[in-house]
Image (cartoon, rainbow, N blue to C red; front, side, top):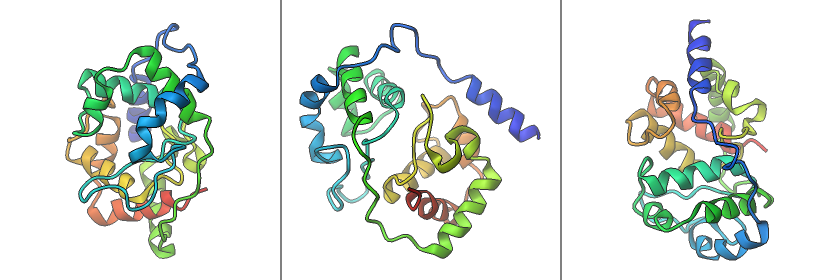
Length: 201
């Protein structure tokens, strides 16, 4: 119960978007602007397997919540989240650009990952998820909501990398919510979560 209350309080502390920032972007404009994103994230926001260099992992953006995409682009631009590829890409984006891109990718159909999920590890991953109360924020099926990302069917390597980065505080742009969850996870549990979440449809 204490853990539930602490997590609920942490979620409530997420930075709210102002009324102006909630304005929707232009999907057609976003499509044009997304052309430069295709090399990493795929032409429609679905990553092409094998395109990420060693040590890097690209996320699928198709079907992601628009508000989450906007917030991440905003954080890359502001330096609250750092990545050698994304930080310079976001540096010159305007608020309009970010919303256009967010709306475009949110409208695209997410395709199932081609990663071969291990059923036994996925079963253990669900147990880890239940114990960590993951769906309290990510919702049932990990479908996400508003500023909380959809992670169902996300690329396995990306899930594992982000959980490790949160655990090791290499990524800290979430008010400490995910760090609090990930800091007690072992590498094995992170891999199990990766198999479970990637296998969700």
